[in-house]
Image (tube, rainbow over all chains, first blue to last red; front, top):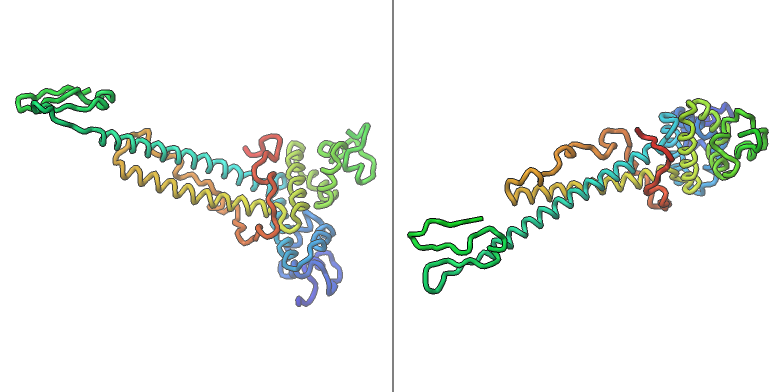
Length: 162
Length: 169
């Protein structure tokens, strides 16, 4: 039990009753806390808001959040803590865009990787039964990467690639 | 405004609406709820003081943000706007983790594939961008606020244009 007046009753220069609605949440060692809240909301409104909350724990949280909002309203009289909400929305939007971009890059890199792997797997060479001529499959022609066939005889040195 | 019909504030306060009424431009008579909710949370006297301390061009935004906060407080008497801030900060943290995972994945892919074409590289300019202002202390983390217990995050907190005109330059 806090002896003496709470910060609210000290500020308001009144007697602090034993059932003071403010005293559990505005201790006398923190004058600024009540001063902030009183400046923005007014003692009467704060008292009414706390009275409407049924439990002590929730009242304590309410007092904390009222103090937080009052403090930010004093620091930023135009936007208060709503400025913070807007900034967070912007951060979320930027991060989501960046994430989408990176995921698209991952998908692109993965698809490129798979395409190259499948082209490597499709390059199967076979020898013409009557000679040592290599015959390359048509898929490679279609891709335009290799010549139609590549003679493998020792005398042949030319290949044409495109 | 005060010429014909009193503004919403003067109607509620049952007083004559002067020509230079500070509330009149922002609390038209056709929207009584707007002033009622601001009066309930902040009090007419406090709102009047706050508006008078601001240049005229900033008052509209101030009223919008006060209405937003008042609505949040009425919807959630315990957490008010802080519930929304906590929820959004959690979203930011989750996105941060997802970004880190995605960036690690892209680095792995690039290492596996060897040297890459310049067009495939990650945009290096974005590497150092800090998306999360709490890293530099501007937005304190409210991870201690158990917003899950009583807060139902309304859609209006999830993404909306709170202000009709740009407020952040």
